Amino acid sequence: MLGCELDAEEREILQHPLVGMVRYSGFLANRKRGSLLPKVYEALEMKPRKKPKKPGFAVLMKGFLGTDP
Image (tube, rainbow, N blue to C red; front, side):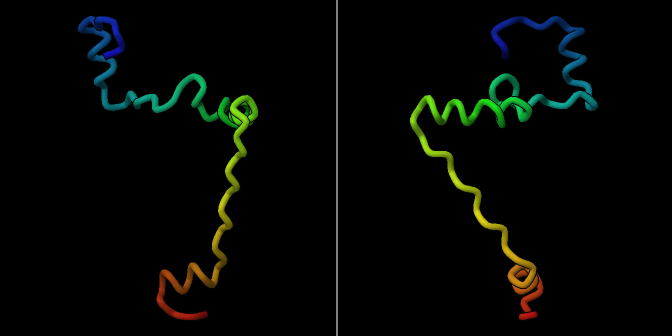
């Protein structure tokens, strides 16, 4: 699993339904990614990707309802 053995008590705690899975930790944690990712792009001489434009209300309405506002 993590390269170490878990005893029965630790395994029981991790299998409890209220214990959520940690998706990203360390560098990929949300609070660090925003500040560290630009530094990684700079070190690798990469250009950051531009965010796509959000569609307007009319486009969303036409796609969802199938009618032209």
